[in-house]
Each structure stands twice: as C-alpha cells, then as structure tokens.
Length: 323
Image 1 (tube, rainbow, N blue to C red):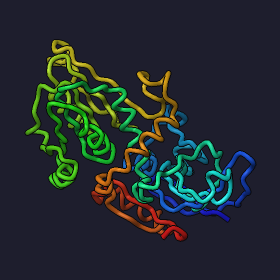
Image 2: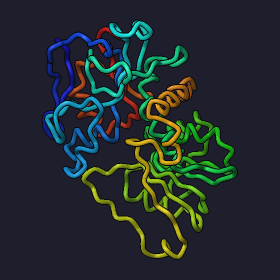
Image 3: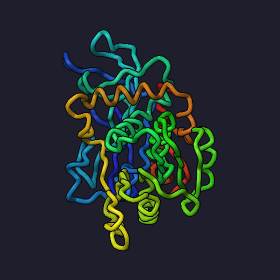
Image 4: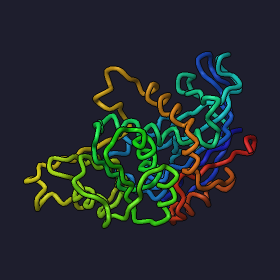
C-alpha cells in the first residue's frame, strides 16, 4: 500500500492509503525522498478558497479528486526511481506530484536532478520554473530599474534569477524586516514599501496583497509595466486604475506557469523550462529559501500550522525512507 496526503475539507487533511501498482513499459516507480509545500496555491487549496470557475484550470498534473475536495493536491516532489527505464533507475528525479510516499507516473513526467543539486534544494524546482516563466514574460532589459514586491518563495526566486541581469537597480520590497537577511544572502537591497524607489521600468508583484499591488503600480515610471504573479483565489483585490493610471499609460499583465510564456512558446517546451529551472538550483544561495522541515507523518498538522502563518518560505517534507 502507498500513503498520500489528502485535503478533505477546508483547513483539514489526512493521510490515506491506496493500492500499489506496478509500472507499465513507459512508466517509472518513484520512491519519494522529499516534497515541498507551496505557500501560495497549496494554502488556498487547504483553506478551500479556489474559485469554482478556475478549479479545472488549476488542477495539478497528478491530482486525484476535485477541488475544493476531497483532493490529493501538490506538485513539488523529489524521489528515486526504483523501477522504469534503465537510464533512470537509481537516479534522483523531480516530479509535479502530490505528497505521496511512492507513485507511478509516465517516465516523461520526470526531470533528473543534477548531481550538484542537493535533494532538499531540488524541491524548489517548481518555484524557480515559475520565476523563469515570469522573466520570459517580463523581458527585463539592459539598465532597467526593477522592483520585486513580495519576498515569499516566488518573489525570492524571481529576485535570485534577476540578480545576474545587467540592471541599473534591483530592490526586493517587503513589509517583513526578517526578509532583509534573505536580501543580504541574495546580494540585493531590501526595502520597506514606503522606502522603495520609484520610476521603475518594471515591477514584478508577488505579495498576494491588495496593498502590495497598489504600491507596485505607484513605483512604476511613466509607461512602465507591472507583471502580476500573485494568485488571490476567491479574494477580489481592489486595483487602483483611477487617478493617473491611464494618463501615465501604465501596463498591468498576468504571468502564470500553466503555459510557456508566449515569447518562448514556439521554441521551448514545459520540459525544457523545468530542466532550465533545475540547472539554476546548482546555486547554493537557494538553500536560504528552505526554512523548515517536518516528517511526512505530521503533514496534516503541518499544513494547518503553515496556513496559520509561521513565517516559513519553503517547508520541506521528509519521507521515512529518505530521512
């Protein structure tokens, strides 16, 4: 029997068993070492706050059940291939799979983890893939003045990638002074929203807050662009489109990882994008994002603790055979 985590009702979850099965010729059996909790989407799923009109669009690749629940949801899993294609057996792999101790998936759904990427760090591949897609959407240019608003896992991933760009200015904007330490690790400037520099060419908004979105628009220079990465679930934030929004010819656009950014879609697949994200994780700075660990057996209680807000960025789940 295999064991998986299910969201059974708003703010309630449990571990359930299911029958094991053998992989077919084109499949692989994976033994999970680690999984990661997405503080954005997974917390909305945990709270039952996924709007009915996008429940189908927001299905995870190997989800069982339907939103709002009961549902087996998640997409940050790292394990070892026990059975499958010879070139994968014994290798560590990343998969967009829910929290489960073993599973069978098509071999094509697995991304090998490079030898220079530790197992814990590899769970960040989904967040970094989202950041890669955002930067393909945003297309920052030489000498740009850029602000990233919101220093959670997605905002931090965007900032980590942007710090190698030839920008004129890069600020990480967040209300939490504890994020100053993260900014120092990344080698960028942390500022409170009220102290952030204006006249930005580009703002990438990741705070999932109405105030953060409003401040991000204020930080733009004339004809600047804000790329919205936050997903609000059933919330409906007010967006300040009055005042000088039109006179300054500002742009507000969405970025979402479900499809490869239009600027790269003809030449990159989702597998290409995920493999690129995985290669970025050779950088040890990403260890700064790993701010908590707990056992798989404790996951129901861990989900509620994370929802209540313990300040963690990426929480790593450790499986018995991978401890």
